[in-house]
Image (spheres, one colour):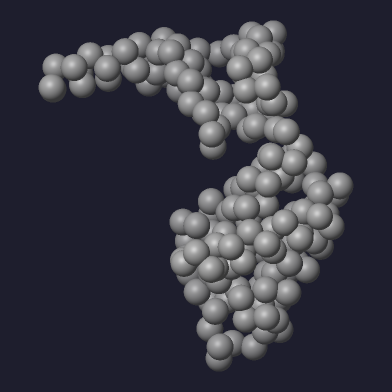
Length: 180
């Protein structure tokens, strides 16, 4: 993807959010991010959107089927239909990426994956969330997961920030020092 396409995708994302930001909840923004990562990993659908021998109506029907269960379906359908009609289906993936980034920026929000080696109570999760809000100066939303591979500790990761304190990280640091 060249810079011109990236810039164009950014403009579509800005326009989309100018119209629909009030209709997008944090959960729906997370779904947009999930959709973006899925399409980023599976480029077949995006390739399908670019094939000129397939009618635009068939492409739009496929997208309608994909978005059937989404509460954000109508605005996204309109965006995809517009991209397809303008023969810019290739911009769908970067548009979703920029919608995700701009949503976080405009709502002053960061989404984190909070991963701990052991279960955390709701109160402990709130303390970690407060810590993240303090250091980032933004509203923090998170998904909690447990991963025993951390051994003991916690890992907090967003698109912009990574904070980790765990035995696994300390072991990696020691391993790197010995390899030097």
